[in-house]
Image 1 (cartoon, rainbow, N blue to C red):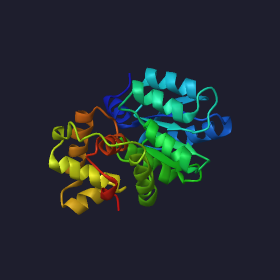
Image 2: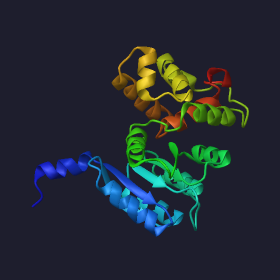
Image 3: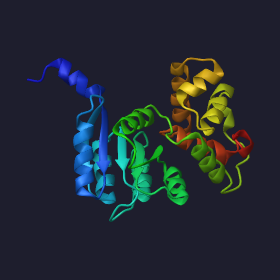
Length: 230
């Protein structure tokens, strides 16, 4: 019989699904993440289609996904995972830093885009961040991506913005600048927990699973404009 404390520890861990087509990298990353106290690797997929199927079955908290994958590429797999599991965060871990890849991944619903050269500490920190609803892009990249996406089509006439309170819109504007929850809290002189609560309310109201999706929705609706980006 498993002790109750052990069961509680397992529930507290961030459940992660890994998806990468290189066996050595996939197995090595799975082993290293398995040694992290905050992470539980619940599955490993070798291609995009398998990643989608396993995500829909296991409902992980975070999917760590390569962008270049057989059968279904990482961008399309991300789109399908987010469609079926909106509360699952997708973290792209790639060998390619092409702007087109980053934009496509974020547009598909990815909450983070990191290079495979990151340290294990940085990766685990990013997993924690996307699990908390944050976007993991450096400030310059975030502004560039959101600015590019905001100009992809005409803004909607601000309809439904009354669903969000003024403070919630302000937090989305700060998120669009690439600030972390801690950075937003500092700028607005509120606690980080207050920012997290506002973000969760925003996600619920907009039917999204991450701050990236919320910011993109706000840009497309016209609640945030390119002028809000520094």
